[in-house]
Length: 232
View 1: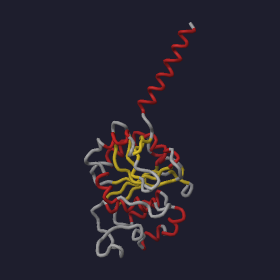
View 2: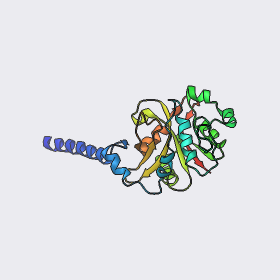
View 3: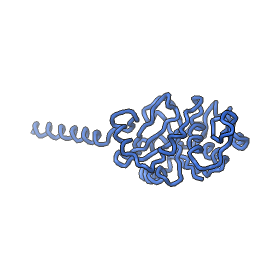
View 4: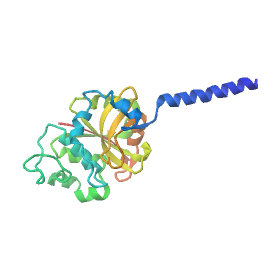
């Protein structure tokens, strides 16, 4: 009887271990062995291929929202402003993003001090001649999020910005913005192109973990973090 009880306990522990192993880690970084295996099967129509040539690193530690926004804007076939630094060539920068219209929504000084909320991100993007839709993270189930990203991260003219809590990913820091670049069905994970690349490399994040991270409360707005979908 004792042997049977011991066998049952051992079997339970083994099942739990195998279950965790099959699920895999919630966050897999780009430069790891596992990360390299996932990126090798990245689809040719993933947003990644459009975003990477225009990927911007945030110029201050509070400009993650602005860097994420201009990464998407520069990846879209839209009219772009001319910055004196690059004149006569048109290109979005983290300076010329703040047009007079954007400044009415939120000023560069405010973003420098406290960043940008989900709704402010959508409003500022709408001032740039694109269509931005804000989605609260706590309104999405895991399946809702999976289906949304499977569609949006392909070559369909949509781009996705994510506002999430770094701690939910086991990272150092608070609320953060970055662009989402690809979905991998085999690992059920999404690639985050971290605009603070001096801090973290791109990472594949499990759908469940991402859902938890975007459903957290933003203390500035007192609303859930979440996603902003951008189209022409």
